[in-house]
Image 1 (tube, rainbow, N blue to C red):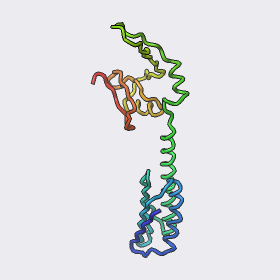
Image 2 (cartoon, rainbow, N blue to C red):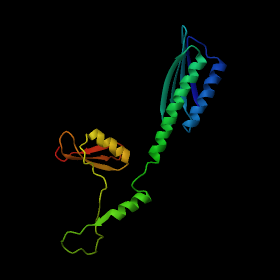
Image 3 (cartoon, rainbow, N blue to C red):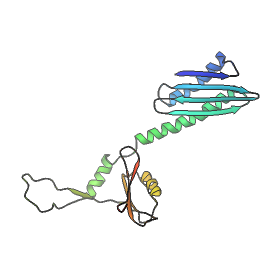
Image 4 (cartoon, rainbow, N blue to C red):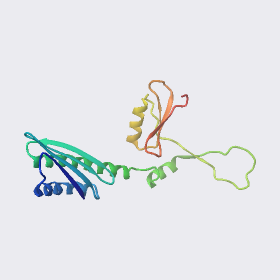
Length: 190
């Protein structure tokens, strides 16, 4: 853990440094790895301000707190950062363990719904190729949606694509997950 402390209108004592480092160890454990922390401590009349910015391998967290006591300010801003770190950790865990269509249960369900497609008559092939299969979709939204609502519904279901009727244009559109994590919109008459 690399901690840098800057004091404005005050001198950083060893006790203050130890207190801040002890509090930041909790966040280091939550973020699963080394962190770089920059603390700015300031005293302005009766206000004691603690501002902390933390960089880890996967996250950048920051927070500011102002109280009447410098130790209380540090403690409260670290509590804020702990909540941010927990939220980040949960988000990373959910993203990592999101069900993909390649898991065995989903693949079995898709295979059961597959319908063989008859090949188009043409010149005879030298080697017979397996027939392509049509997989029937189980979801189609009959209620008109906006593209934003369609993306929200797609996120909640965990599917890769959602076909819907656009509420404004009354045309059939589709939203899909892109490989880069964003969403794409297909409007066939656009």
